[in-house]
Length: 340
Ligand code: NAD
Image 1: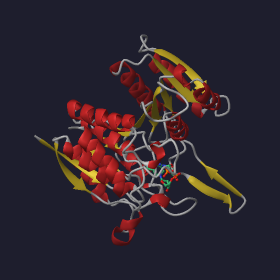
Image 2: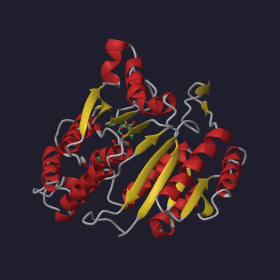
Image 3: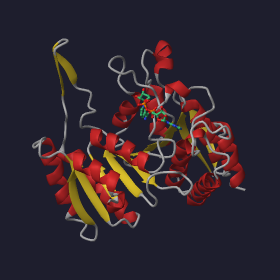
Image 4: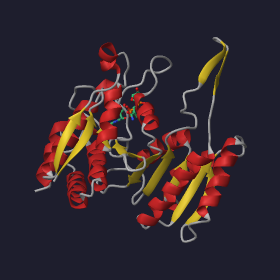
C-alpha cells in the first residue's frame, strides 16, 4: 500500500523543514510517493504566476498535500499563495492544535487548545482598494452563513470526535454588528445541535487577555479568518512558540497540512530553525491517511527528543544562544533515531 502526496517545499526556511519532515515520515515505513511541486516567488519567471495550475491540480488529484511556508510580500506584490491554495481548494477549516509539550519551556503547563479558523473568506478575500491614493484605503470583510456554518460545524464535529468538552465562538460582534452578528447567530444555531458540548462566546480582545491569563478555561476555539490567524499565533506562544505548532487545512475529503509558522526569511539556508511544527504536521497527515500508528510513533519520538532536551534547536533551549543547540537536520536525525 502506498500513498501519493503533494509536497510543496515552499521558500525561506520551507525547504529545510519540509526535508526534515519528509525524512521522518519516510522513516515510519509508510510508503509515500512525494509529488514535489514548487510555488511562490521563485516560479513566477517560469510560469507567470506564483501558484501555477499544475500545483493545484496535483493536490486535487492526490487529495492530500503538505507544504512548507511560502513568503508573501508585505504591502505590495502578489496575493498570498497560502491563502490562494486554501481558497482554490475550498479548504474551509484551518485546524491549529496548541498543546503543551513536556520539556518545552513556557509560561504554563498542560495547555491544550485547538484553534479552528475559517479559511476562505473574512478579511482574507483580498478585496482592497485605494479610495484616495495615499490618503484613504478600503478593505472588504465578507462573512456568509454558509462558510460560518460549515466551520462551526467542523469545530463541533472535531470536539465530538476528539472527546472535547467545550467550543468557544470568538467574534467582535459589538463593533462588527452585521458581519459578526451573522457569524454568531449561525454559531448559536449549530451549537444547539450538539447539546453534549458546552458552547460559549467571547469578544476577541477579551479572549486574548483571558488566554494569556487563564488558558486552561478554553478548549476548542472557532474564529473567523483574521482573528483565527492572530489568535493561533498567540496560542503557539503559550506552548513554546511557532517552532512547535502544526496545522491542517481541511476541506471535504481533501487536506493540506502545514506548520503555523511562516518562512522566517532571515534564517534561510542556515540549518537552524525547529522542524517540529512541520514534522508534527506530517503526523497529522499520517493520521488523515489512516496511518494512526505511524502518526503516534512520530509524535512520541518528537516528544521524547524534546523531553531529553539535548538534540533540539536553539528555540527549545533555555537560552537562545546556547552553543549545544543542534540544527534542523540533526534534530530530525534525533527524532528518526528515537523512533527506533
Ligand atoms: P514567521 O513565522 O516566518 O517568523 C516569525 C518568527 O518566528 C521568526 O523570526 C522566528 O523567530 C520564529 N520562528 C518561525 N518559525 C520558526 C521555526 N520553525 N523555528 C524556530 N523559530 C521559528 O512570521 P513572519 O516573519 O511574520 O513572516 C515571514 C513570511 O512568512 C511572510 O512573508 C509571511 O507572509 C509568510 N507566512 C507564511 C505562512 C504560510 O506559508 N502558511 C504563514 C505565516 C507567514
